[in-house]
Length: 296
Image (cartoon, rainbow, N blue to C red; front, side):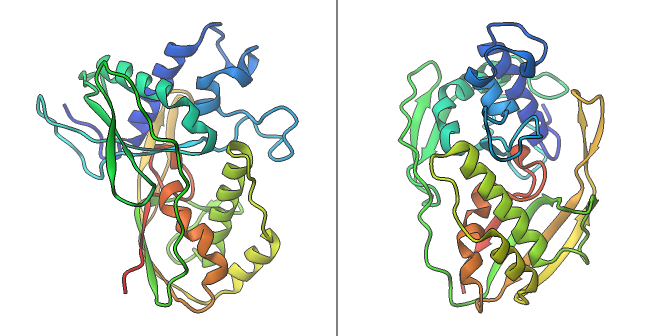
């Protein structure tokens, strides 16, 4: 079998369909019209409606999803029996639905993946013992119980006293006034305000500890901070959306962003979370993936 170069859209679609088949008990055509909208694992994970009485994003039908997919950064030609590792980050209360997600991936993959509908078998699931440590433990094997570790937040180190590099591995798509920003247009203010908004919304809707900070002051400071140097290129890509019945542009920027140590401290808590949460548009399907290199 062969998966597309950017397989996040494929896996996101598989998860959505399989999760709906696994948990939907009403058979409604639209989740937004369903009596169980705010009590359903599929609706929470995949549709993510604002809760009743939400103070933020009241005019939106959905809020940021509590998951991020990290497919391998390659175009795999898989032979029978060859392993394939798919990364998944769950955020806040999204962790409560891990059993449903594992079940959906297992059933969905078994029914066939990609255009060729080649079946895949979920062999096991591993969980990082603490985010960012690189230490993993097996929590599930095929047809066995799921013994997940209680979720933890990443432990943030102090801001470095030397320049760091943010590597953009999949296209970063950030808009300003309705237009996607190119390599010559992206400033630190655009990058940081997008990230700060994402951290704020995820904490507001998916955790019990909403982010409390000086949003206006940080955003203004980021626009004026001169410590960013970038080496970026534009990467064309689009995906086909079966829901919308059309191709959706997902092009964006890849490359490297170097950040100076002077004046970095106020922005550091959000920047540290960027590799876990991703940046820009399409984060749930693996877009805006980044790595933070703090080595001197």
